[in-house]
Image (cartoon, rainbow, N blue to C red; front, side, top):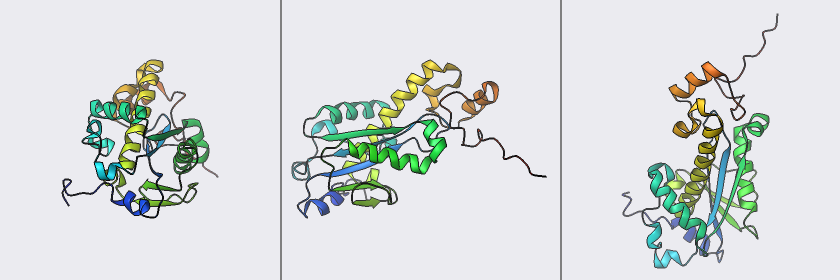
Length: 217
């Protein structure tokens, strides 16, 4: 189906029809990098927008990976200042990721984001697979960030929040180039790790940072 024909309020409508008006889109950023936190966001858009359409300021809202950095920043500003929108952001540090693993850390960040929506929303739309530990009932949507405006909005907030943190870490640890690759395992990043070792925000349980298991004789 072409993007022009896609109803990106389709999943929200199904919940709104049950007289549930507060439906949170939930998404994360930073599961794959070798460094930095994993960040999640939860966003509740007004049901009235399904009839009136998105505000002009959100025209073109989509999966954050499909947007330019400038567009993401533009959407972030509107999403976080519009009084009709509720949002929450949660994050889990690299240290905790190493302690509990990236999957559990991602789910923890999602729950932290939802916890900032008071009261908790009765339902959430989650990008990807179901989250067993999610604190509210959910609908999991594969590629949901491109199929639901609520999830797309969450993906933008998570991505911009995390990118800003990586820019700050770049100033703190300039030899790694975090501003450029945001912690992902690019050739430049791997070369920096080989030359300088890991820093405080590297995920020590991620290959190639993970130490080999000792051999037993």
